[in-house]
Length: 164
Picture (tube, rainbow, N blue to C red):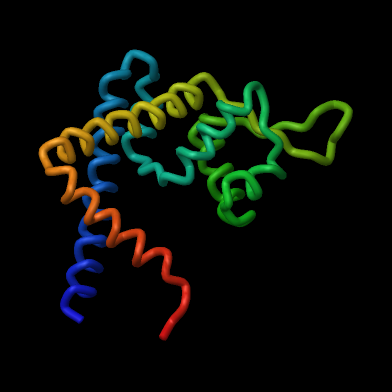
């Protein structure tokens, strides 16, 4: 049973570390791009702690091109309708995206990024690139068999779907 407790603790510690690393990287990216934001935007962005889902939503809208159908978000992002509504409201209040209707379809709601929202979506991508570089540097110091063993254990734990 001790191994289970140690694995659970290590997973929680890793999750906490990864979240702190992402916040640190994002704070640095915002600081590096201060010239792209107004003073008010910098204050708002620094004060707002983006959830990963909010960042994914911005990246999704950017990847969709000029517009994204609100209705598709729950399917494509695997986030509940209620959470999507909260994220969209918050991101709109921050001036990162806009909601609108097409002239020929007043029912459907569409989203588009503001110029600031586009910058933040780019920062999401950069954040993951820097995060991957950080972990790749650490993993490069470990013998390949240690990594293979860790992956084997994690796969075994996540692939077992039956109890008993």
